[in-house]
Image 1 (cartoon, rainbow, N blue to C red):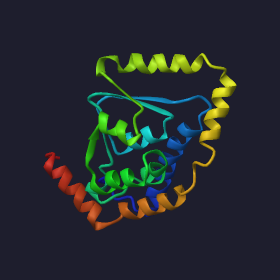
Image 2: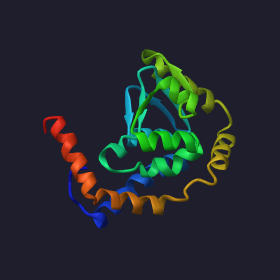
Image 3: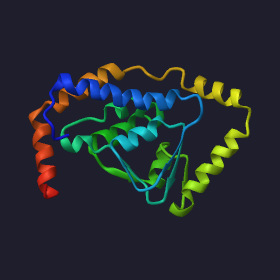
Image 4: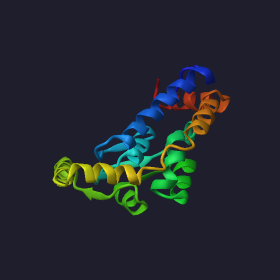
Length: 181
């Protein structure tokens, strides 16, 4: 974030990041996230792209981008579909984090587990899904995701512009100074 790449050099990077998230959505098999600890910024955006999200009790979700003069570009586009407009605005405009239980109430997380059993729960859920006819699972996922993908071009352009603002550069400097870097 501290590099001064400019809009033209930031845009391709953002396109690649969004393409990676979109590839998760378009993956033929279900993608289950097992979130343990902090999932800030891109971590929360990746959770939005996954089909099912399980969280350990210690999990924390946030869009920290507004605290450094940015917006969560993928999160702004995908958030309303997953958690609704109000939760997306709350997360994207405040930079606050929420715990696993609150994320479950918001619809970002489907199940909360003790941290030590999170991976086992995710593997068991994957085995349960894998026991179903593969084509039915694949077609069902594709049908649910049939309208995803719109709005990303505008989000890339807007986010790239924010990377090139004085406010962003100053926020990053302040963040780094607070961390002693």
